[in-house]
Amino acid sequence: MKLPRPTRLGGQRGRLICASDRNKAIILIKEAVVSGAREPLACKELGISQRTLQRWGSDLTPCEDQRPLVERPTPKNKLSKEERETIVQTVNQPEFKSLPPSQIVPRLADEGIYIASESTIYRVLKDADMQHHRGRSKKPSSKPISTHSATGPNQVWMWDITWLPGPAKGIYFYLYLILDLFSRKIIAWDVWLEESAENASLLVERGTLSEKRMSSQQPLVLHSDNGSPMKGSSLLETLYLLGITPSRSRPRVSNDNPYAESIFRTCKYRPNYPAKGFTDLTDARTWVLTFVQWYNKEHRHSGLNFLTPNQRHDGSSDQVFEQRIKIYEDAKRLHPERWSREIRDWSLNEEVWLNPERISQALTGNKRNS
Image (cartoon, rainbow, N blue to C red; front, side, top):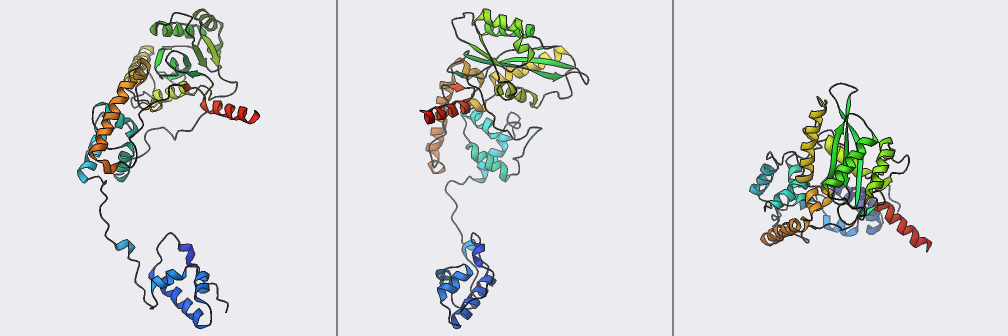
């Protein structure tokens, strides 16, 4: 006997089948068996197994699926109501309310406090309808990096210029900034009224003085894009005298100097950034000074496993990580049922590449060619 082609129940795999559909399936299969069909083949036509049919029962009024009605025990690692309230109250404190959990957790660890993991805080905020995309920022996109590497501070510097809005439309101030690749510390900065290689030369000299790098025996690379101030003769002469190797991005490649671009984004998306413009040059310099102090001393950088740039630059990162590890180990001992794996990895690579993706591709290509 050839069965008609009813709606297959197999399409409902992954969700519960209601009692009315079960009744319909049982009736169709019984009619097929009475007409001479084999029960396994009739079940296959409807997209169910014979074992499923047997489980449903042979009467015409099968009961609803009881799985959603079963009382399940509360998981041992479930947060209590008080713990969830503590998390919500903590993230809404004035010092934390503008920070994501990825910034809050390390700060609490530095204060000797552990309330929950980063993922748990995100989950609690989502349940409380408090996890939203904030401000004018958009989703980050991955960008390729460059080919220099650093195993310590003051080996590779990156610099760039960005404009800051002035008191009226069409009036701008120009922020010059040098960043260290290894530590992401702002080495030197200034705000001027124009872009010029002479201003860039003064900034490089100031950076070498602040880092006490006066010997040309210490190798140092200064990376930038291809703007005219970066290629000016006065800047190149200064680099030559200081024993600094200039490096520039590839032509027509806008993302070969991403760390410098990234810090400008961080700067312009600060909550107190005057998007309507600075009143004068002094106002711009005062605001940037406050930003630099915050960035170097307070900002837990995600690219540094949430160290501050100063901690990475001065070598105190080991002590900070040791304290965080101790806090996490104590938290795991207190509630081992909440930890399915090892504690969070508080460490950093000792070699930083400006373009690790391109390096890995080159190594892969060399292996194929060899």
